[in-house]
Length: 93
Image 1: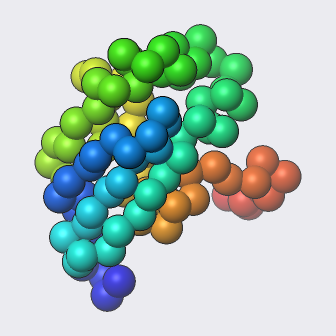
Image 2: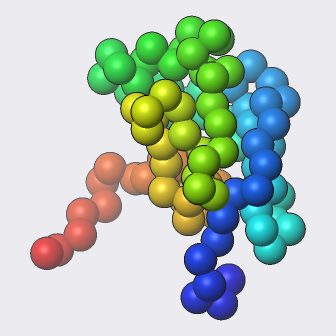
């Protein structure tokens, strides 16, 4: 990455909760969303454990989204395949 915005150009479901993403710099990531969904305590996020909800994703404006942005992730986290962050790390303001 060189400071240029990265966009997702395609997303394909390749498993129960796995999506293959292709970025506009030809980077490919295969992301397993199940651990994130299972660990969530929020019922709106856990709803995406229903296969029909999870399968409703799309690429919009270079981002991976579900619904009206009800579930989305920072593109940089998807690019790095780091959708889960260590909760023990705190950042000072």
